[in-house]
Amino acid sequence: MDRTALVDAQAIDKYYGTVQVLKNVNLQVRDGEVACLIGPSGAGKSTLLRCINRLEAPDSGMVFVDGEPIGYRLKSGRYYECDEKALAGQRARMGMVFQRFNLFPHKTALENIIEAPVALKVRSRKDATAEALELLRMVGLEDKGHHYPAQLSGGQQQRVAITRALAMHPKVLLFDEPTSALDPEMVGEVLAVMKRLAAEGKTMIVVTHEMGFAKEVADSIHFMVSGEIVERGTARDLLCSPQEARTRAFLSRLMANAA
Image 1 (cartoon, rainbow, N blue to C red):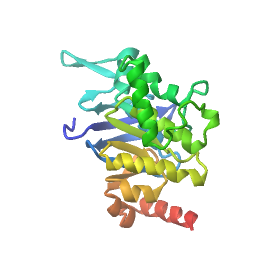
Image 2 (image 1 turned 135 degrees about the horizontal axis):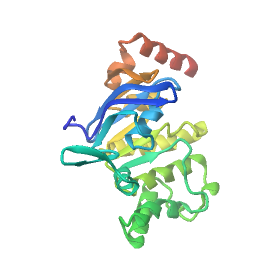
Image 3 (image 1 turned 180 degrees about the vertical axis):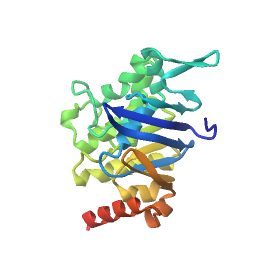
């Protein structure tokens, strides 16, 4: 285990049937670091995120968050699988923001945000509500707390989803292509919130195709293809001077499509 890393994914393999979608993936992210995962569709980026927070169980390998093995408990020098209650407690330390928002449609924005802190008895309803209102102010939605998801734009729903993740005070925020389901004019408002979180020193792992965001905010970029991380480096090095032919080809295609 890398004790300097807040998130330490070690030798992760994942199969769907006979298809191996993650191949001996290693990823270390330090406290306060923004790590971006880039690569073509089907590269395994989203699956890696889901293995980190144990929405998917790796077929081999281990994930540690702040030194704790995710999905396991250590007893007498041996690892044993957690029960669902213990796993839920571990997941609470990782805020997940999905492509499609995943808000409860029958609950207001405010109710969506306070659901987990209250249900898991992390905070009283009064305290959770006060904090949720402050979070909504932070993302510019202070007047939308009593709106239902269907009454909000895609960008507004995604900002609510971010505040819902923040309400649990997670150690790390996981973003799975958070702007991919948005209309182009709404992308900027979500990226602005993410840039603010990065500036505040939040630890973030972001699957993204937004190269401008990655270049501006990322401390490290990890290029994935066919289930492997084939190149990693700083934003400046990887985006401006990639060493691998597959990385260069991918970035060239992105630039051609953007032109």
